[in-house]
Image (cartoon, rainbow, N blue to C red; front, side, top):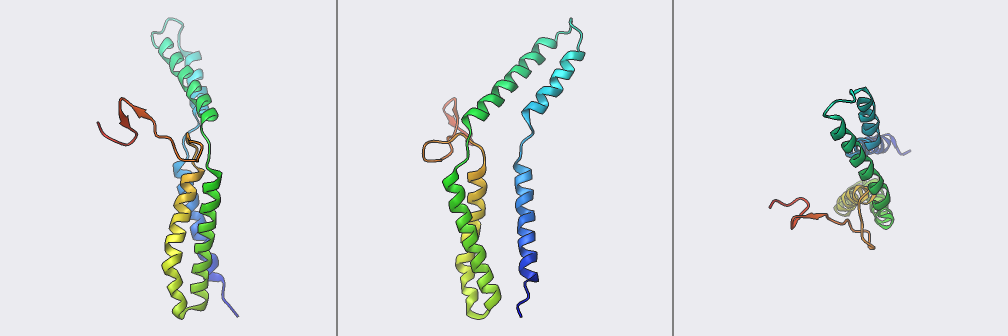
Length: 150
C-alpha cells in the first residue's frame, strides 16, 4: 500500500508558497486610495492650498486605473503552457518519489519543467500591456527602457 502523505504535504506546501508569491505581487487597489483621498478632500477647508493638488492627484489616479483596466491583459496561451509544464514536472516528481531507484533520473527533467511552469505561470497571469503575441510591452521614457539606468 502506497503512502500518499508526503506527496499531499508537498502539494500543500507548494500551494502555500504560490499563494504567498501571488499575494506579495498583488498591488493595492487604486480605487481604495482614491476613496480615502476623497474623504480627506471633503474634510479640507475650502480655502486650503492643498485642495487643488489633492483633487488633481485623485483625478490622475482614476485616469490611471481606467487606463490599466482597458489596456492590460493576461497571456492565456502562456498560462496553459505553464500549467502543462508544472503538471508535467509534478508528475515526474511523483514518478520518481513513488518508484525510487533509477527513476530519480526523472528529477533531471522534473526540476526545470517545474521551475519554468511556476515562473511562466506567474509571468503570464500578471496583468500587463501586451502585444499581439502576448509578450509584455516595456514602457520607454526618455530613451531609457524600463529597468535600465540612464
